[in-house]
Length: 310
Image (cartoon, rainbow, N blue to C red):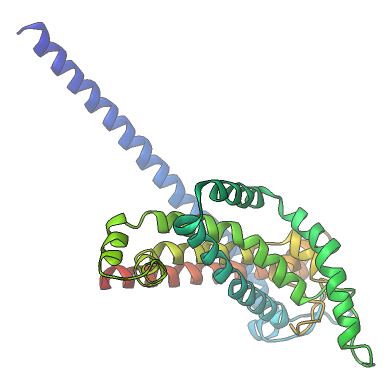
C-alpha cells in the first residue's frame, strides 16, 4: 500500500474520530439542557405547591386581598396576576408595531449608513441593564405621569396620587425594554427571506411596500412570532425596572393606580418572608413559570401550524 493511500485512510480515521467526539459532546449538552429544564420544573412544583394546600387554591388565585403580615393573613394574588397579564399585553401592543416597522426599515429600506447608526443604537439599548431603564423611568416617565395625574384628577377627592408610579409607567418601560429583542430578531427573520421572493413580486408589478407587507412579512412570520414571544418572555420576567416605576402596591390594575407585578411581588418580599408567606411567594413563582410554559406551548402550536400550511 503506497503512502498516499495510507494518508487517505489516516485522514478518514481522524475525521471519523472527530465526528464521534463532536457527536458525544453535542449529545451530552442536549442531555444537560433537558436535565436542567426537568430539574427547574420539579423544583418549582415542589416549592410552589405546598402553599396551595395550606392556604387553598381559591384563597390564593381568586382572592384580591394581600395582607401576609396581618394578624389574620390573606394571600390573594388575583390583582397581581391581572396586573401582569394586562401590563404585558399592552406593552406588547405598543412594542410590536414599532419593533416590526423599525425592523422593516433596517432590513428593506434604510441606506447602509443610516442602518449602521440605528443598528448600533438598538444594540446599545439591548445591553443597558434593566435597573437603568427603571431609573430613567423614575426621572422621565414618572414626573410626566404625575403631571398628567394632576390634570386629570385635580378635582377628584377619591383618587390616590402615586407620584407617577403607576400601571401606565410600567407599560411604557416594558415596551421600551422589549424593543431591542423584537427589532433584532425580526430584522434577522426578514433578511433570511430569499431575495427571489422580492424580485418575483416586483417583476409582477407590485410596489416595494406591497412586496414588503404582502410577500416578505408573511414569509418571515415564524421568525417574527419567535421575536414576539421572546419579547413577552422578557416582559414577564422583568422585575427591577418595574419595581422602580410601578409603585409596588397590590391594587386593581387601573391606568393610574400603583400596581404590583408577579416578579416584583417576589423580589420585594422574599428578603423578610417566612413560613406560609414564603411558601406563597414560591407559589407566585410557580404561577409565573406555568404562564411562561403556556406561552411557549402556544408558540410551538402556532409555528407547527404555519409550517404544515406551508
